[in-house]
Length: 85
Image (cartoon, rainbow, N blue to C red):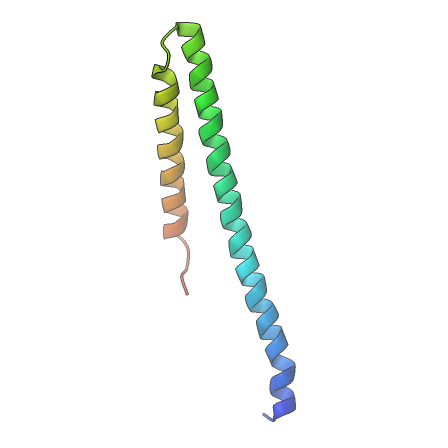
């Protein structure tokens, strides 16, 4: 393989590597957004239950822990299933 052949193949490799990095970053960005949305929605539901049952802040704390714990478990499972380079 001469120098010209190497020059033609390197940009493809760099583009593929950048695509993989971008894909991984977008995947984890989505997971982070999902994490925040689930935790906030579960807290809002807990707050709503607290207003109905007059138990402030019991349900808010309970649903925060459920949302946070569930999403943390989900993130750990996703990270465990990934292939690390």
